Image 1 (tube, rainbow, N blue to C red):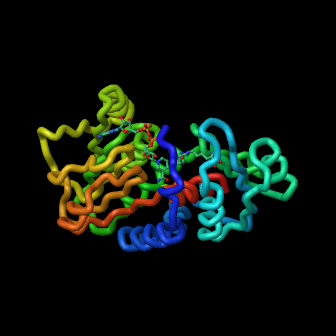
Image 2 (cartoon, rainbow, N blue to C red):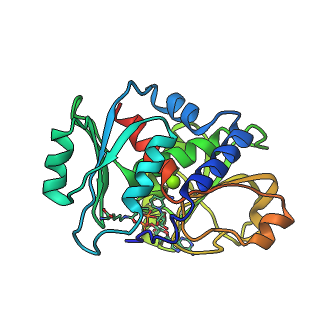
Image 3 (cartoon, rainbow, N blue to C red):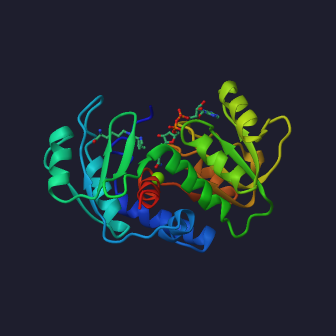
Length: 259
Ligand code: NAI
Ligand code: 2YC
Ligand code: MG
């Protein structure tokens, strides 16, 4: 399980603003508008309780504070409980939280106590980053490359396939690649048959997974993957537009999915 570090979450507001600007350049919409279009939902003053969780590797220094900043950036009222874990959950409900946000090392959830809806960060992240890439205004075809077909990548690939895109997929794990081919009907991408893509979605925990020969002009890389999937050198050489942010885009996708 690739866990965030406090370093990943530094200057979260600037990271959100930069990602929002990139989403607007790529799609013509801001992140909230993409969420509204994707889920057909809009906030109505829901109060969010953020509960720190001490299990496993324990509390990540600025994780809860980052969720507080993220929820406020997207216009929600939110608070971080003083207590963690069960006491924190109790505190959140007593203080009137309608949506609970909390994460252990394996699951990051949003639970709407009013309508019972619950969301998991991994599929919600894959779906929103795929949706952003799928709305690329200057895409040169319906071809999209998905690198990484795990807990985030597979739902992202499924989202592209459901929207009728030609999905070329690759994963270092051949079993996962085969599962995506048989379950989603995607086309296995082989470096031996190179093609260029104007839409690339990457969801791996490895750096530099995007090779030069797949980058077309007007290329957009939409990637929740940490660390970054493309070197600064390649990004500058091809003037690639990149949508990448460590926590907020996936979180707001979760929230809109439970409204
Ligand atoms: P996962 O482990 O379920 O999936 C990652 C997949 O990448 C695996 O199937 C693995 O075989 C594949 N992979 C690894 N190296 C590769 C390479 N060089 N080429 C091709 N495939 C390769 O992990 P998960 O949960 O899907 O997360 C993926 C990444 O997204 C992680 O870095 C995680 O930290 C990040 N993440 C980011 C979020 C955000 O909001 N930015 C939210 C959730 C996860
Ligand atoms: O501070 C806390 O409450 C910790 N229990 C939070 C642990 C989050 C662990 N999960 C992750 O770092 C990644 C994130 C990208 C979101 C999903 N998994
Ligand atoms: Mg994100």
